[in-house]
Each structure stands twice: as C-alpha cells, then as structure tokens.
Length: 249
Image (tube, rainbow, N blue to C red):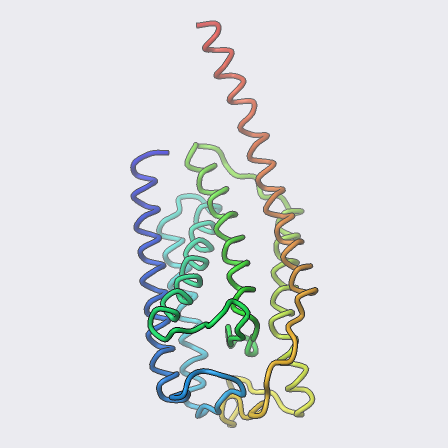
C-alpha cells in the first residue's frame, strides 16, 4: 500500500467520523426537545413540518456520503467502496458518540429508529452495526485490490446476492413497524398532513425479526465472499509470475 492510500484512508475515516458526530448532535437536540427524560418507545409525535425536514435531512446525509465516495475513488468500484466505507464508519461512530454524550444505548440490543425512507425502520442497535462491519469488509476488499492496480470483478451473481441481502435486511427493519402501522390502519409518508409517528403513538416494538435479518446478512455476505475469492484468484497468477521471474533472474 502506498503512502497516498493511507493518507486517503485517514481523511475519509475522519470525514465519516465527523459526519457521525454531526448526526449525533442533531439527535441530541431532538431528544432534548422530545425525550427530556431519555429516549424510549412509544415514539413521541413530531410536527409534520419537522418530520419533512428530518426526511430530507437524511437524504442530504446520503448525498454527502455518496459525494465523498465519488471524490475519493478513481474507478466505479472504488467510488462505491469508499461510499459504503464512509456510510459504515459514520453509522458506527454515530452510536459511539451517542454513548459518550447521552450514555445511550445501554446495550447493543436497545431498540432504535434507524431511518425514515421509505418508512421508519426500527431495530436493535446491534443489527445495523453488523451490517456496517460487513460493509467495511467489502470496501477494504475492493479498495486494496484496486490500489494494487487490478480491477475488482463484481459479477452479476455477486451483485444479485448483495442486493437481495440488503433488501431482505431492510424488510427486517421495517417488519415490526409496518405490522403495527397496518393494525393502526394508517401510515405516515412525507406527503402526509399528520404529525410524524402519530399513526403509532402507542407503538412499542415487540420482536425484531432476527431470522429474516440473518438470512439477509448471510445472502449479502455470500456476495462479499464471492468478490473476495475472485480477488484471490486474480492475485495468484501475478504472484506466480513474480516468483518465476525472481527464479529466472
């Protein structure tokens, strides 16, 4: 690895950590306003106007993380890898800073509201952390391989596995919320005139669908391992060629 690579890795990591702190700061303010006694379910209703702001703030956050990946990467694969690396580090340090500033979560199985697009996602803190670590693993496989001057092979099978795994995990996060919203007979959207979370103002998460989540994680990890195996195969002939040159030299 070159000095330039480590410099990029450090700055991208610092950017993602700083983004994590900004996200934490916003949540600190929101919890002081809506949860002065400490965050817990059921969720407090949030004015529709604030709900819309939060919705688009999350979109803006994703755009910023994508932008960092596009700027840092040289190839399409590298751009994707740096984006998911930023996303994962941002997500992990978001919880690190919450723990430092608010003493929350109390444990990795504490429930959190994770995202608002297209509907609110809820789940234990441990679940997004597992995904974040998988994303870091994939990102490092790609960027290290590309840094060594070889194009990473991500075939349609690997893409399909990772996409399917991600979708299954997303469904697992939305599962409990959608079930409860359906029972209540209403669901908030960005165009709704109702206050955010009014449709589940008595909602307390009952059970996270760990089985569905682990199926999604396993499928996605299979795609990551496929890319890793392709990388090893691509490296082996080069190593053999270098060995032969060294002997003949």
